[in-house]
Image (cartoon, rainbow, N blue to C red; front, side):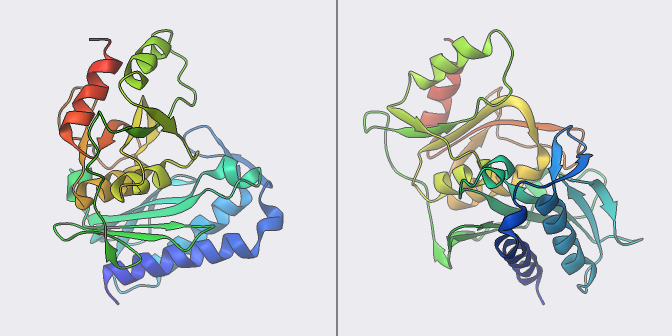
Length: 270
């Protein structure tokens, strides 16, 4: 079984587990994940189901995961798997049907970064959308190639913009500056879905400049890049982040560099 098939199998298994146990959607484990958030029971169970698939595959993995942290499931790992078992946990706990499973796989290396990701799978839990990205081969939605929109700033650009827990006093004015550059905004509450929708042209950009998003969301930025979009960091450089849990993501993912840079200038109040 290929790496892609393993990632798909793991994501689909986690999705089925969630859908089969929706009565437990608001149940907590009583513990916290490495990022200080309360852990949902289904989050932990979905994570365990993904790890089981990886452990039983023919490949050797180390795993970076949102709910437990770093897990070595092999003495000599060939690959690192980066897992978000349920992106949109709050949505799930409140009955909002917008959440996804995200998995990325990269060759194992002590210096591995997001640029080394070879495969990403993002499966929407409450719809039939399954997104795939393969390095150098593009991105697909349900096995059909996708690409970002071609909308220009003059054509009613719609973006997603994450402001959760953004408490710095200057973040409000900066966010207003960014949003004033576009026509409107939407937000699902599941960043992986917003990034997939940007990759597929349903949204024109997804912005998260809080510098608090865990690295487990790299499947989303990988999806945008492979679809042909642009992802830049808060300095305007191509987005890249070490694949370890000590780092946080901050980025603008957009259909074009022009839109990404315009949003960034607005955020900087230039």
